[in-house]
Amino acid sequence: MMRHVLVFAKLAALVELVAIAMASKQHLPKSSKLDSLINFKVRVLAKTGSSFIGTLLSFDNHMNLVLAECEEFKQTKKSRKEVKRYLGLLIIRGENVISVVMEAAPNLATLKPQLRLNKSKGTIKPLMKKVEKPSTGTTATPAGITKAPLRKR
Image 1 (cartoon, rainbow, N blue to C red):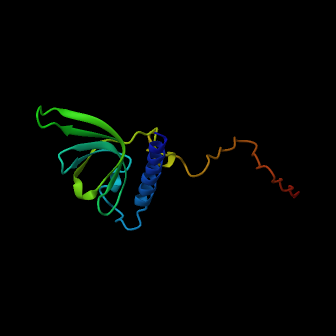
Image 2: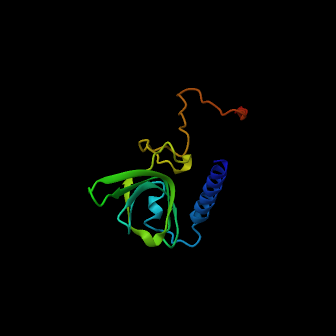
Image 3: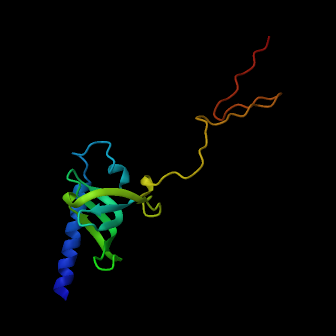
């Protein structure tokens, strides 16, 4: 039992390393349709007829996909009933992928702060602070500046 736990831990670490390696986008085009779906919940249709729903973490040029919190949906042959099973972290080989469709937008709570969308209403802020006009009569001088002496005529 303990041996299986160690093998599973090593496998999980290996999958994380693969996801990190696939996340480096040095060889990918700048604007990719799949790139816009990162962190989105997607449905992947496979050649076997089963579909996988999970959060898209990464992909590469061969269209190998890494899905987190993945669930598999498969139809049984006899009763035409859809069977669901939870898979967790999954790597799908690109040659088995038929289509990738967005299911839902990413959850804002789980995203890194710099990736979160700004949900506030748009406001216009001035570049400079508002300067108050001095009231008539006496003029205020800024701090650190003294008044010049008055000349007598």
